[in-house]
Length: 158
Image (cartoon, rainbow, N blue to C red; front, side):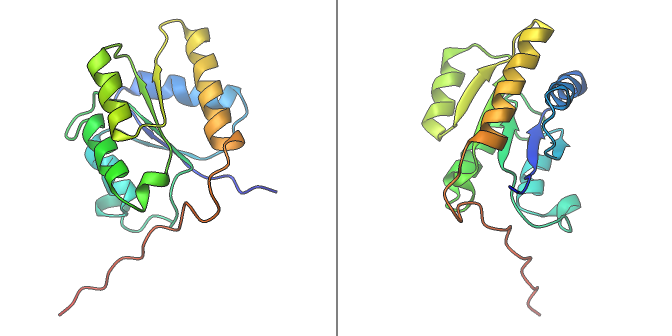
């Protein structure tokens, strides 16, 4: 049986996060979903630092990323992940309300795996999330060994 890997949802809107979680649940995706509310928390989670320094090892199977985030915006999070040789293999799907062409172009320049504009209609929104969740968390096959465990914390040198 295939191991269910975590989905990382980076979303500052509590309402949107709740809708995404409900859509995933309605569609019986059993993957654990970790929700963080800003770009700084997202990077702390991925790199196991700050509040997340003791979290379980391993990387998410997919990152669902909003662009308009507090502290560190989504484009900066995307740039950080895709410039890191270890993290760049983690699929990143931008879920945003932005239909702005410069955002779309910049995301693809940075290496985003998919760009999804959040539909306004709930049923269309739920269908979009179902498709994203099923494809990236279940159907997509990453290369063997492409998602190594998160690095162990470095011992401080005295």
